[in-house]
Length: 119
Image 1 (cartoon, rainbow, N blue to C red):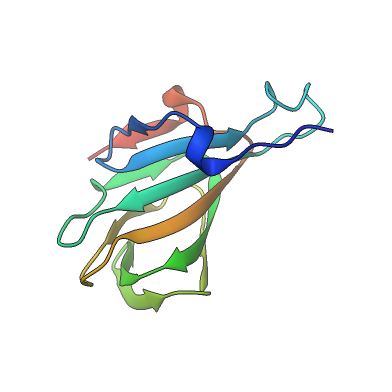
Image 2 (cartoon, rainbow, N blue to C red):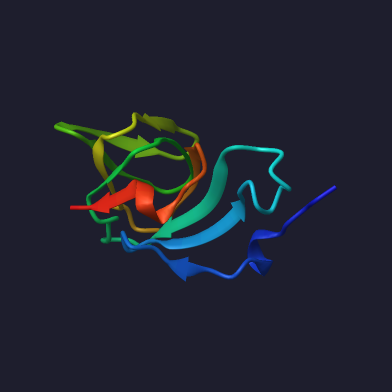
């Protein structure tokens, strides 16, 4: 059994300006999974940089609210909401709330730097 505590995972700043804690990827799970899952934080008034992924993504909002931008669409999103981001979609998430916007990001297949293009 492999378990992790969010508070014990070292954070890094993503290319898109978020604080990211990589929870699991195929490497940490002995290649038993093909996706990656990360815990992401966007501070109030900030947003991720517009970017495109070759892979699909799923965001699950744990705390806060914001505006999700996918292509020409935008939608207000909040706690307990899930967002599907299709592959090759220009996207960014904006925190227009007063508290940190915290979410889980699931990328399938697993996130790789070469699959992400910042705008």
